[in-house]
Image (cartoon, rainbow, N blue to C red; front, top):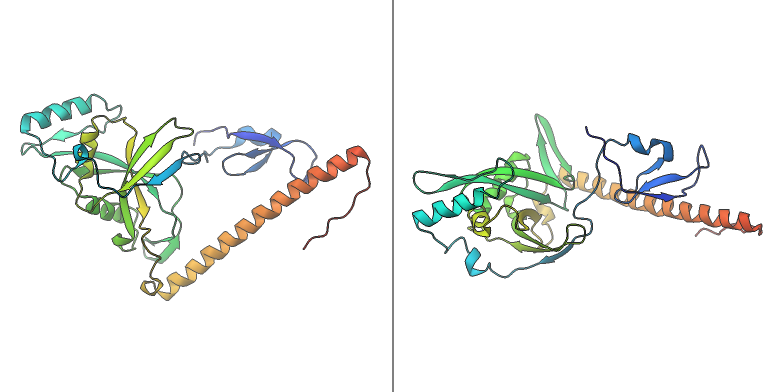
Amino acid sequence: MISVRHPLIESRPPATFCDVFLYKCKSCNLVIHKNCKDLIRFNCQNPQQNESQQIMKSPPEEKFDTIKRTFSNSQLASRLERYNKTVRNSFVMQLRKDYSFTGYIRVELELTRPITVLDGNEPPRVKYLPKNTVKAIYLTSQTSASQVVKALLQKFKITNDARKFMLCERIQKGRKEESHVTIRPMTEFERPLFLTLLWGSAHTGHGFRLKDHQEAEPDWFDFEEHELKQFLRLYNDEKEKALNEIQEGFEVRRYQIVKILKERKEPLVSPILH
């Protein structure tokens, strides 16, 4: 693994074994000793952290309509050639003899609900998918959005009903650090690879995201008893994590206040905790 320096800020959490400056990561709140910060060997930065997101449910613009839009054979060949010149990796599109074409799209998986996953011969496990999961998927110009959803679920061995997820077009505007992103849910018959070609370039700020279908709450009667029990364990873990974060924040503030009072040589008053 590659060593990646965290975006660290100085802070003074409550001392345990020493009373020196510690560091706290801006992204994941990791607290670490000053002399150990260069030993961190994972990257927790979240590219969606400062992202302003808006859901757009209107149909695509006419020029991006992959159901009605067509090209002549010569127009298609010309567009593919222009698009491939903008590709910086190996994800070029290939024209077939029947004038369909193949290629890759990258899909960001932004799932906030727990999913059920098969793991070999083990019983199905309920878990959260890690943030910033990205999958490149190979498809043809005729592959539909609903087929892409099913293929992604199969690759990650997710057993939940495909109707609980939606493939979205992602349109990013502004700088990467403070970007504004519009999310447009795609209809099941839209063609993602063809839409990629219509964007005209591999670097237009467009992309794809797999999201939870948010139209309604989950139908809990669809789940098995063991899945419901794992849901409860997950939610309890989330509750415990949130409470710990609140307690840690309180301890940091208390430490800072006590230190300031000591420096001023004022009498300390024990706080009353409710």
